[in-house]
Image (cartoon, rainbow, N blue to C red; front, side, top):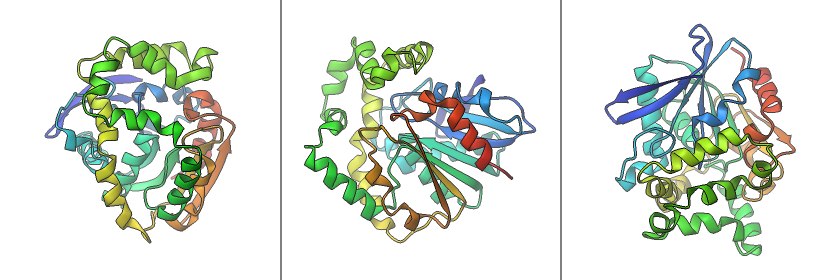
Length: 287
């Protein structure tokens, strides 16, 4: 995909674009610790009638490294996406999000629901699923919340900045685990994420996603009973140790219409099984 810089009032962002401008836009938002590069393996399997538009989120990829912590609240990151789309003159679009990108996508869908025609989430809690998320958290507590260690670590003042710098390769490779070691996730992708994490201040800006969880959570606690109105699909990598199946409990209460597809994969489902994910997207993303 082609990459370009987009400058809007909220800042400067890098955007990948498949370039087929006559295609229906599908906005794909990456998670942590990735960048928009994570959609590169999916794109070749998508039908030509889809135009992929994939921004790098603030503080990750090649987008700007903002040091104001509050701008990493997910509602604020959604405002970035809306400005980018307005700048590109994209009015109506399909929306896909993975990991933190899935949370940002949910905030986008809340902010401009009339513009989101179809909605896909991958391996991330549904923010208005208060009941299901509480049940999943109880299971994680029974496991001493060990899978959440990296979230707690990044919330500590100064620690990520002090300990990740100079150790970016060890840090990034850890999260891709066996799938990375065995080449299921491409070496090129992991090297790209390492490169981006070596950009100055990224340990701090990456941690910003986690340092704002307390503020995000207070907002989401008030969303009980709200439903996403657009047709929606949840793709779940069943072997994820953090986004466990219990997070899908009760999600049917959070959407007017929702389909769930389970794939035998870990957390980075779109990179582990790109052809299978693309097949689901091709079937679902129809005008």
